[in-house]
Length: 254
Image 1 (cartoon, rainbow, N blue to C red):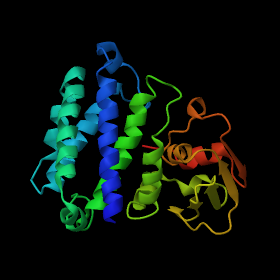
Image 2 (image 1 turned 90 degrees about the vertical axis):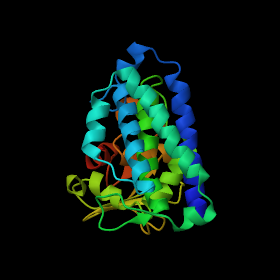
Image 3 (image 1 turned 135 degrees about the horizontal axis):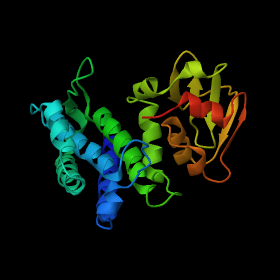
């Protein structure tokens, strides 16, 4: 588990650096332009990630914070302040995580406030990576319509979503939108998504009813509502008892 935690912290650093480089290229028009998140500007994506970093750091370090006040402050900030605030708060979170030694990474638990009990640090960081990797794509695709999720992060997200963070798929998946149950293998990744009474990602899908052809990063985007036709790489397809459009309905995203 420590290895997964280590790799997740490294991925959070990589995404921070990627977004810092992107922000450095943006003028005010870029910040206020549309993002891959349909209802948010690029600055609002950064605001969401920045406020999330502030709240996550408070949770990781067990310091009280009023989430509503945090969100209100960020919402009242200008687009440039939101971008700069993201850089400040996300750097602070990543630097704190990087400073933890092996024992702290293995034993620290985090009270996220909305789950029944504190979770291992690896679980909390899997949830953070889910936010950061996908909203980083929301930002990147505003500049490059052919952008994808980082391949290393897609692999990590699959590990998290098939493990301690799998409950997130229960929040975002809509299994009742499929006409029949389906087990979809995600290319040659070794992962499969099972949609029946619920939704789960597994390394042992067993007999499958459909096949997703394409890179794992596209499969991860499919499960999180980010594989709309205009952002689907050439060659991506689904064959079997469900179609790609069926799965888009079952995974509307967040």
